Length: 329
Image (cartoon, rainbow, N blue to C red; front, side):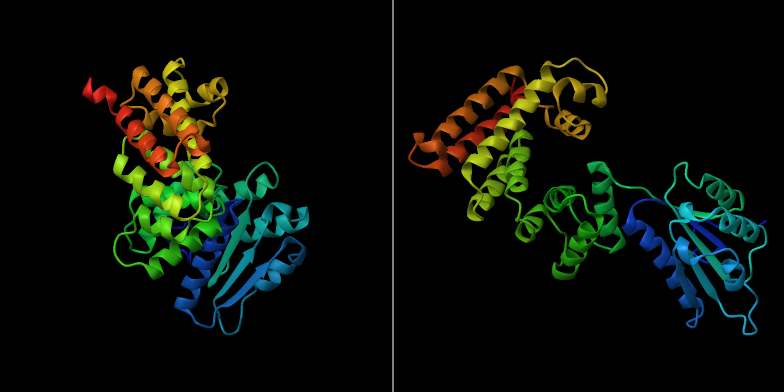
């Protein structure tokens, strides 16, 4: 059986990357290859798909070499290997070759579970590569990217980047790389806004989030930036309305788990968590005041007033004050 592998040693005889997040799977491979080439610049790397790894192929690739060269053998989508090839891999796990690192990429789940279990039993160094479906996971990923680059970014900047760029990890990683390369010092929300204002919806919701959190100055700054970059005022009033209504809904709802409240209120669970954080200073009277302010602003931007920008600024300030109504009671 293979010796137990240190989890932080990329040159362990066997690395098992489990999950379906392509960027993380690729990084797991790159880490092993980089470590191998740092140890031996002439390392031979073989990157194989299931159709390329036929019965007997692994034995050929891992047979002793006259030159004792270091080798990395990468097997992608290992859950799709044929039954005969899986037998070969399991046999190899019992007696791994020196100077060879085998990297198995497995989606996890029931398919090919026997191989997954065998690799773990053999002491594989395991790297988790789960699909990141939750906003909180993507936020943690962005924070980790900044830390890995040795840079500081505010929590608001990380959240703004996730809101603006979306769910694709490659795009998020690329965005972090661009900010790190272009900007000196701490990266804040304003910097992210200057780089990633392509989505009007995300920009308008930034205004709403800051307002319902009681952060008037930041909400006004986001508002002015949104208007300067062409965001339609009606999108901003819509976002403000949604933000205040979410506070009101959660205030009147019965307590419970985010999943239960999500079903009751028609919100995703991550939204429940965010609104819970935002509603700390709110009272029912404050919600009523804020809703009236939104209604006035909506009328103002739709022709009921002379200055739509002023109407929005007034609403933002009123909402931010209402968010702190409990503290003033």
